Image (cartoon, rainbow, N blue to C red; front, side):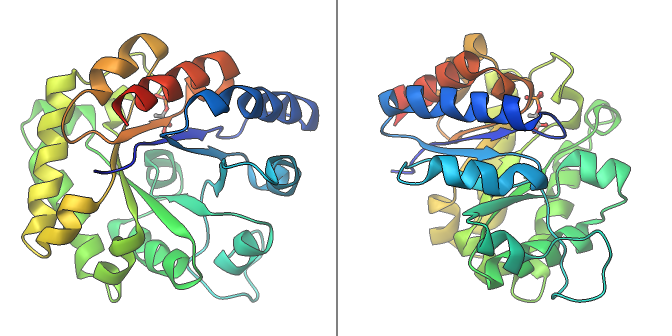
Length: 254
Ligand code: PEP
């Protein structure tokens, strides 16, 4: 049985004060969802602050990105060693906003996954098709290509043993449009089948989250699907009561 995961991606939001309030809100409520692994992923500059607040709790700390390089002369970048040093458990990799606004290719995403895993971080790797790709019928081709890049990378299959996949249709992120449970399930099943072509045990055990406008009122029906093992939550993770309600929906599945 795969343990459900619910991760809050706070993106580029917050102040020291609001991050403290949100963290405390999540900490207070999350005890009612013991069967779920809960992550919060604040901006880099608040990671230490949140790490201190989370000490002694079961909530995991995640970053939103990392460099694929070793420490050195890379102005503005943050490497896996630093994320470990400040207490991160994992890191989101390949979010569609990184792919779109920072030109991250499938190859870069794969290298980041391997770099994260090499330093003991859990990679949460995002894949997903754009609206145009869905409409022209290439969803499976795109997802297949993104997955193959991960599996073909040097060290990729090893890193995937520890990874979590987040299927995030780009057209559903922050738009209020959500994939129907059936649409999401179909892609999740496709992902598992694709991984099974290389390693069937890994395909059976890997957690595959859905992301894209998950809210308290649609989380239950999404998480009820066989291959959906929780969610990566953007907008709704910024409100503790909404995020906790989503955790609770995943808890009922767990
Ligand atoms: C995301 O950005 O990962 C995401 C799923 O955002 P939202 O929940 O706001 O669609």
